[in-house]
Image (cartoon, rainbow, N blue to C red; front, side, top):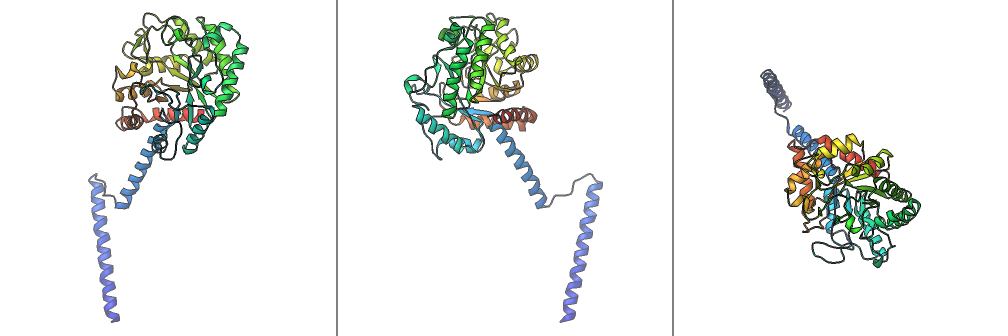
Length: 398
């Protein structure tokens, strides 16, 4: 019996040595012929896992570049917006009082107590610090209306007419304290458009500008920003490069300012950025063929890279105006607009779902469009990383 075991072991050793020899022979020959030896399953799995981790990291960074709107005055773990936060790792949300697609109230805001609870739940369900944004300019563009129980906020036009920066700062600080108490951390204000055309249906005509003098706009805007800074509310200059001379509403269609734009409209952006008081800048969906004959500012590297980044030296977060506004949707496919906005230099894209239609698939579609564009080489990976770092750096200051 002992001899039998020795014989079996001996044969086994011989077979093992033969196997090693054969493997070595083919490996050496494949290397000589320039072919890579086949990976063992464990090596293939390891490489696939690394690729999967990198893809997931990319998707999560892209998610931070999206700020989305949703319906609902309260949420639970099963709510649409909670699923979006979990699935997409979105960078932020924007709240409204009025739902445009259905032409009805309420959308997200009913009262101070309800709004505070909603925002607290949003933050609770978000795995990453969340931008919670609102348009609270004052006057007609203010989602926190006095009739809901919020403080009254005069229009920029009225503040500019008073021409008292200290009073503007005081009013701004009161608004900012209310925003902070509710849980907001981003206010898409102040408007720094110069009131070139007082009949402008979307800017001057509804009192959204401080003045027709750029230096007065700068003075009032700086007071507004200072009032927001103490409670820690991020402000946003809008609408770059200046919407004040336009004759049409970019919510409805493309706005051409080629023959109306004046150089002084750039002054508020230039001076506020120069004083390092700009945290965010919002682009406008307006076209000036003297700068870019084909694309509006939001989709144009000539505006965003050449002027805003290089000429004005802005290094902060650039946010698009709503990517579902008529100026974009009536002229560009969703895929093209998203890719062009990123390549132009937008860091954060607003998908409000508060335009003509309400499309719950739009945020996921936007994430996938950007992801696939990176994989196909249409958007550089570095562009995503830079935008992500700007966003995270700004969030670290909250």
